[in-house]
Length: 156
Image 1 (cartoon, rainbow, N blue to C red):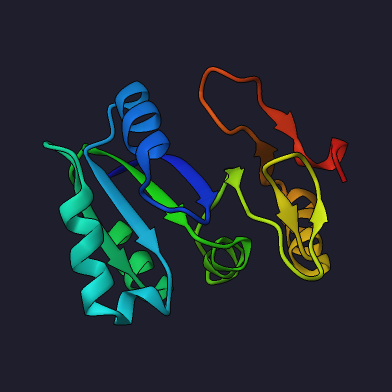
Image 2 (spheres, rainbow, N blue to C red):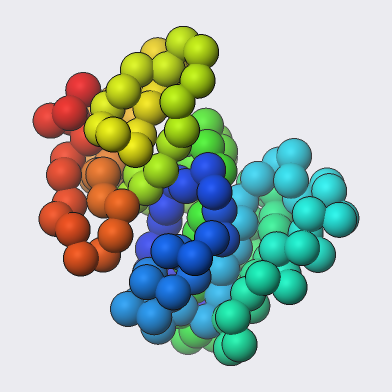
């Protein structure tokens, strides 16, 4: 498997991700990385049914994702999709060799600070993003592939 894109988007496999990013990057597989969601068989089926023709969806825990990436020797383009910064951070902490992380959409809520008009982060998420950046991971903001990448450290 050739992981070509890692994205945090609380909406997960919605229209923009499916149409814009998968088309541009020729993604054939989306792996949703989420410890909680991977245990929800109903939501797993819903997400799999939402996949466009030619793109498969798997919903895996962090440990399952690490194993899946190591065992899959195909050359198929894939993306890792996270609902939260925390799940991406935990995957990195578990040993995944992350180089780039796209932050697409995180909604507002109690205790969240506006980073852009579509990204709101808690103090804990901001610290996780900073730690990833300090560790050599390029964490950037970019809603659509037609927009420029913005280093998250410039927005914090």
